[in-house]
Image 1: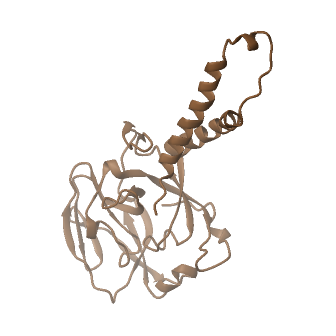
Image 2: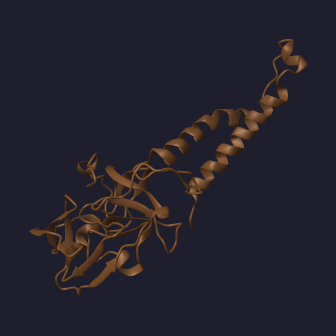
Image 3: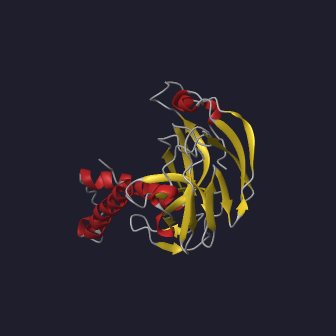
Length: 261
């Protein structure tokens, strides 16, 4: 069952504010207050007064500044591992109203190479994270496990063999390659023995073509199409924790504070 946390925050802020504010308005200027009488607040009002500013602060930070996410799969290995907890910049691509996701202030748009969180087009209740490889107007091709943008090959350089741990151990032996995408140099994983899903695609206005860095193990734009601008959540920028509790009971302290690029 999917828990809609943004809606919960909005409703909790509205309800606690309504209870506290309504009670204050109803009792303002009453005779007892004017005479200095002290009236004990009902418990519900007291709780609302205490929690309203906290919930409001969380709502503002989470909606307009930064939001935490946990990586549940290996589609972005080796950049992001299963169990990584990341922070996402919520204003990189414009300020959006919570729940409605309506953009109210345009502050920028994704660039080639950005690691972005977005609402999965086929089920907007689910958040995905991938790397932008194509922006509006780009012609994207993928042949023999090599990416081409507008007819230009994206440079790759062999960088050894991947040796992961925990949830990433299943990718041991995959080829590690350095890819320079829009000036962003990052690692990708390629399994030479797996068939290539070759394609060619033109990215339309207001859409973005995304792929996982784990190229042969990623459900991305090659399979379900582009990401509309309205589905964007934000740009990933830092790992603040790593704990793959399904594969290990230990926290990977070395990953804490790692920048996402």
